Length: 246
Image 1: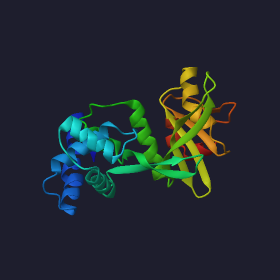
Image 2: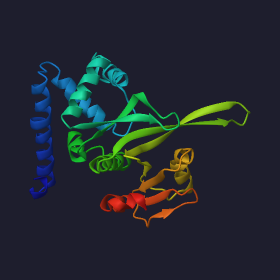
Image 3: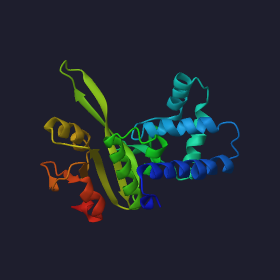
């Protein structure tokens, strides 16, 4: 429908109306929400502004208290986030400890089911390519029938003073389907060697042989490094579903 509209303004208005008249109306009516519609609107705005960021209901509750001067419990926020997921507005990506082979209850990440709706929600103001690209990849992997989590890898090391230290390294996506597994990083660019090293740090600490992939925003020819990590441009990745197994 939006493709047939002649101007950007008309397309934007269509998406905003769709958001309000269809999705929000469905949530409000289905769950008989009377007095918290403004809270629902603000919650969607906050989540839309922070796609790809780890969060939890308590953190969001604190955001309402500090930025909106509104007191709303973490339990209520958790309930509303569940409503948005049921309405297919949001996806909740659970956090998975790769080495410990267990889920971490909190925090989690939220992605929009439709990036156009997310952008319309914010009036097309926040166009961070890194976060939008991550959201697009998440949706595409879900569309392909994968189970998609966000990962964490604990890494123990010795500091220069000889003391032991431990850090948690993030893996953008832990992707599963049957006995298949992939670890995927989303990176807008890896032209800078230091940036590439940073992006693959978590992947090199994963102690198994499942395929590891870095999807980049640049148009590049697919290649593998000395660690066996595949680097592929997002356009090729999205258009060729077999590229994940190169």
